[in-house]
Image 1 (cartoon, helix red, strand yellow):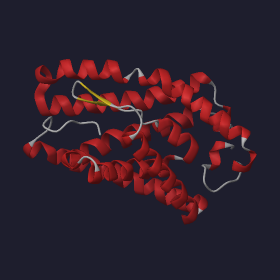
Image 2 (image 1 turned 60 degrees about the vertical axis):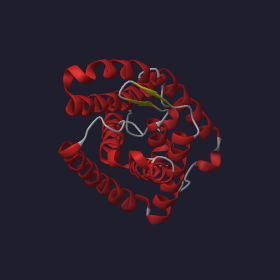
Image 3 (image 1 turned 45 degrees about the vertical axis):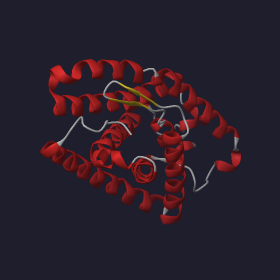
Image 4 (image 1 turned 90 degrees about the vertical axis):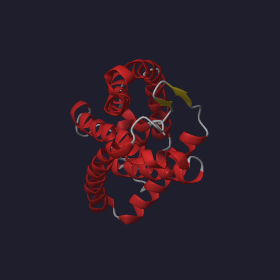
Length: 222
C-alpha cells in the first residue's frame, strides 16, 4: 500500500472516505460502459486477471518503504493498456483490499486514501490516452514517447496524491522531507515502466490469438 499508518489520523481520515466514494462512483461509470461494450463475461475475466496481477505486484515484486510511503511497481499503465480502464480499476481496488485483508490488516484504515491514490491517476491516464493516441491506433503500436507520457501521468499522479495526504495529515513542515524522498525514489519507476509496457505490448502483438479476445481491451488492437 502507499500511505503509512499514522500519517493521517483521527477525524481527518473522513476525507479519504469521500474521495474513495467519488473514485468508486466513477469506477461504476466505467464498469457500465465496459458492460455495454463487451458484456459481463469479458469484464469479469479481465477484472480477475487484473486483480491477480495487482496482488502479485504488491506481494512479489520488490517494494520498500521510502519517506512517507512505499515504492511499488504497480504497472498501472500496463494494466490499462492490456485490459482497459474498468478492469484495471477493479483490479487495483480488489488487489489492494486482498493484500490488506490477508497480509497487512494494519493498512486497512488507510484503504480510502490508498484507493484514491491508485484510481484517480488511472482516470487521468485514461483521459490522456484519448488525447495522445490517435483514434484507430491500437495500443500495440504505441511509441516509446507515448508510453513514457502515460507512465509519467500515472506515477506522477500517485506521487501528487501521496504528497497531498502527507501534507494534509502532518502539515507542510512535517511532511516535506519525506515527500521529497518518496517522490525522487518513486519517479525512478518511470524509467522502467514504459519499457515494460512496450515489451508487453510487443508480446501481445505477436500473439495473433489475442486479437478479438474477450480477455483484453478491444483497443489493444483497435
